[in-house]
Length: 289
Image (tube, rainbow, N blue to C red; front, side):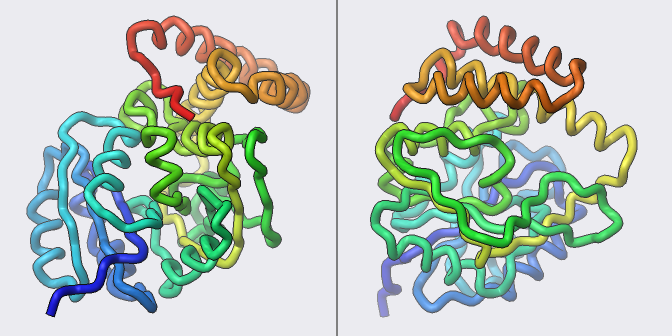
């Protein structure tokens, strides 16, 4: 019997995490969905045994698994490889160090009963309470981002994010030159901003939950990650101001934001904004919306 067309796909990109995939695989085995769905896993140029581990997992997983590769490092590029490998109308994303709750896919699908929603996100909680309280978001009530509006980074994060397929088509997907593995890691919020510019609505819904097992303890490693996020944020502001119709909202937000943070962070963001602005002339950034 021919399998029903998928209603939703879950896309995960991974790179050189072979030794940490077992618990992640276990979490995928607990997922429940009331309709047909695709699991898409993208190997983003791993040089360890990730490829072999993925093949073994796919051979034993009870659902449909699509394995694909993107040899060039970059999370934006890898996410594009993933969502284009499936025909599902709703594309959910999480990361290879996150564990979705069992009902995650059903909870994501419920958001898209509203046909005007183009992208969404949910709660991100710590899996290990001793890890540093970073890369999480636990707001208790829903938040709506209306078409043409502005969205700040950190609310709807790639660890718990979904898009309507048509919204991704409208914006030509994620920017290949952004994301982990590139100098500027903000491919998620950049795509969300462009979806708003294209006329779609965004929604944060706390019903969908993933647990982030990033493993970082307070200290040097966390400080380095925060600096990387500051660089990404500066580049995001630069791209918005240079190319997007929401530039004035972005500029007002940035000026208010600057007043609330140390000068060292502002300086790092400003340097990143200048760096990104010079790079964009040869990188051909995705500004579709």
